[in-house]
Length: 297
Image (cartoon, rainbow, N blue to C red; front, top):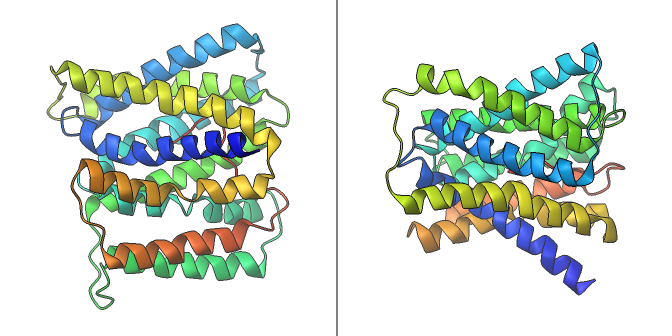
């Protein structure tokens, strides 16, 4: 059991570090091109995995339309808005905003899937919103200034919640690997023309170390870590694994301090405690607690 939790912790560290690595990459790659390149390597990884497991199946027209929507909204816009936002947004604040995805998923499930909206979820949501407000205002509660980058990170959080909800519904009749591969292929195809339309100027790094970071993070974040998580999640209680995944903002905070020399502020610590505490309070006793799927972030 200790070994299982060690592997799950490794995955959380990888996913939390992704915010800092993304911040580094957007300095040398334009965001849409970075999205396209990353999706290309993710698709290659998924094709390799699917070839090994041989689980792909044909889709009917209804499911195909759902996959197209998921690929555009839940993959391309989700990835693109993430890198677009990180151009100016702080990686720690971004991680804290994205930590609220389980709560938003719960609200969307209550609206579209008629799942029960509990008092715990409402109270946890209020605590998380207070934490976000505290972080964004940097502790100066009377001064609220939301920069453009944070708006794009909110878009990332919303599209991530939509992706979770759609994957949950589609996985009842389609293998999750099939969903992930096809939706990522759609996202990649859409990203190619968008790179020329949205990026002005189109920036691409000539430094091999940045290319190594791009390829390495794609393989490790969306390939190796996802496989490790999905393998080990079977051996632990899902609610405990869900709590563990909520430690990503703290990882982003520490990695930002180590790699970007960004000081950790008191406002970030207090705000993160409110946010993570609110998310845990909202989701801990749910019958189907939030769990990271094969997409990885």
